[in-house]
Image (cartoon, rainbow, N blue to C red):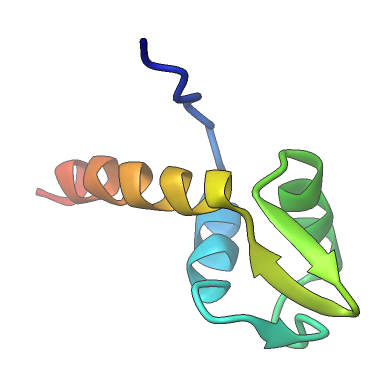
Length: 73
């Protein structure tokens, strides 16, 4: 059984998700609306003011990276 979910993220959302591979204090380099959209999708959490990817966010990033590489090729 495969319960992966495809997300149709904008280019800015992908860039924000990639930037969160390493937690950033206060998300100082990310726009608030991008962080909010990723939190609503369950891809990012805010823990004591620190942004971090959820396990789902990591899966989406890994799966999406392959798709993005196909688009570039």
